[in-house]
Length: 171
Image (cartoon, rainbow, N blue to C red; front, side):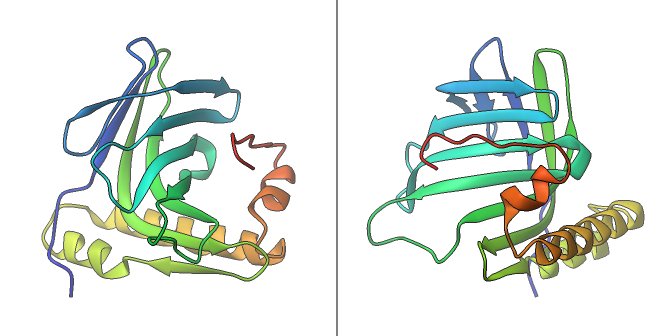
């Protein structure tokens, strides 16, 4: 069983062009793009050996952060996208995300796997996340996996049914 830890929180500051990570370190962002359905962010990841760049979309209505990791050679993972279940607060010039522990590893056209259930349950038992947020995270993960499965495990096909078109640098 995973050790309990507080929910990870991030700030996306459009004016400062920074993403303050869960360790409260502001990271320089190369690009923010605001769309009616969400916020796009692209930035390098200094100090990370597994990957050197990330692109993420914050999708408040879906309670998802969708990330494409640019893995460093030798650290590649068999995944196309990594989806974090999160509460996302859309601000005028600053967005906030509070991670709800559950993640979905998506392999386009193949499968979607929910991970970190043990972290969510440990946090709930420790009182770091309440029953409402625990059930919200589970319901969101189930609904997302179901929607992906109904659309051939294709993120873009599913989101297109919602009128959402994600644009990426390298895809």
